[in-house]
Amino acid sequence: MGGQTLQDGLAGQGRIHRLWSARLTRQVLPPLAAVLLALATILPIGALLVRSLFNRDGSFSGLGNFVRYATEPGLATAAWNSVALSATATVLAIIIAYPLAYGLHRSCMPFKGLFRAIVMLPLLAPSLLPAIGLIYLFGTQGVLKSLLMGEQLYGPVGIVMGSVLYALPHAVLILSAGLAASDARLYEAARALRAGPWRQFLAITLPFSRYAIISAASVVFVLVFTDFGIPTVVGGSTNVLATDIYKLVIGRFDFELGAVVGVLLLTPAVAAYGIDVLARRAQRTTLSGKSVPVTPQPSALRDGALTAFATLVSLAVIGVIGMAVFGSLVKFWPYNLSLDVKNYARVFAAGDDGRALVASLWLAGFTAFFGSVIVALTGWLVARKVGAAIPTQLVQGLAMLPVAVPGLVLGLGYIFFFNAPSNPLNPLFGTLTLMVVCTIAHFYTVPHLMVVGTLMRTDPEIDMAARALQSTPAGTARRIHLPMLLPTLIDVFGYFFVNAMTTVSALIFLFTANSRVGAIAVVNLLEGSRYGQAAALAVLIMLISIVATALQIALRAFILRRQPWRRKTG
Image (cartoon, rainbow, N blue to C red):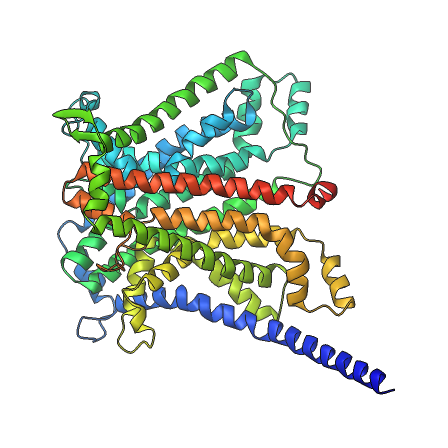
């Protein structure tokens, strides 16, 4: 009798524990996640917006700072350069990326995997590395400077060339998604009407992919418009808004005008993001559940032309990045072209640059680990609708915000918010911890969408069955959602790691002598005209990113092999 009473007591305690665990999960976690995301995103951006409306002495100026900036010499030129060069680079990037994406998904050209890997290579390196390669190719002492026909690399030409190379992988990825999602029945109907391949392309393929083109153009424009690295290296005397904000804050300590430029950078970025969202929604409405994937048929003329084009683009990418690698191995460019590893030895012998590379590894590791954990939590809260609707929707909105905020703007906002003497979080300023927080916030949206997309594919009946078995939300997440999410989390970890290794703009305002990272050290070396050493450090960053990506792919494949139920159910 006593044993039965003890069992009943333990069972009652278990029910109470499950009740409090479920209540804690639903009532505490969503508001806590919203507060953390607000601290990392909306509050710093709000601090920047407020700072643009106040004078240095703290008095309210309204639009006075904007008027003061409008009267600054060179404003119109910098604004026009930013818009014109970004538009030019966007058009060129789309013109190059569309045939590449078409060849990868709508042709039978050989070596698709190789072409794709080469085109994606700039994603694994700081944007400074292609710019360094352009200097060795087309700079004042470049081996191919005659191909510019008298034009100088340092200026609009260099900015456009570097920006196209930097943005090309992003454009190819977006266009590939658009071209991969199509309906073969449309082409069957066109062939029944005796429409030739060119007519099919003009009547079906091009109109069907127009939303992907708009989306890719929006993303590329924002990337180029807000990029700091390439204009700094090959921009010469050509002013753009991204370099203006750096000069105002670092050179003149004019934080008020820096905030004004931040607002100017933020406005087109938000507008372009809105266009991108509308284009993606329109793209989804063009497909139905009955759509049939397109299977390309061999065509000697088409496949040969696309293969030749992909080969030329791949050679251009390899040539620019390969030239940066070659420059890092040259003893003294261009007078002594014998090869050695002295530039690499100097990176570590100098001490500061070697420590910066190690700091990059710490930054990337912490960003990837904590970013993956937080993204998994917020993605789970949103996808499985854990807790009240308002906090969950707030988490989703805050998670989507960073994608529309340029890194320079976010970093400057962190100065105004976290460096405020009245902020209890002020001790974080200038530390690696704050740089980790900023990097997670800067790249947060894409991993969040990856997690939400994976969990949204989970059958809702699983949650219903778990509740019927009195399983807590945390218990269901641990036993069911986490195993399903594990391959995606490996991709999220790799995404955070690589971007943390290569980012410059989000951290350029936040580092100190004790928290300088590798990508920032490359900027400093270029400012000191130590191109060989800068190239060596940038190459090391790229090699680390390549190794990390290879490990990510291998680990993901290993996990999928250890989950045979995916093949049975999928």
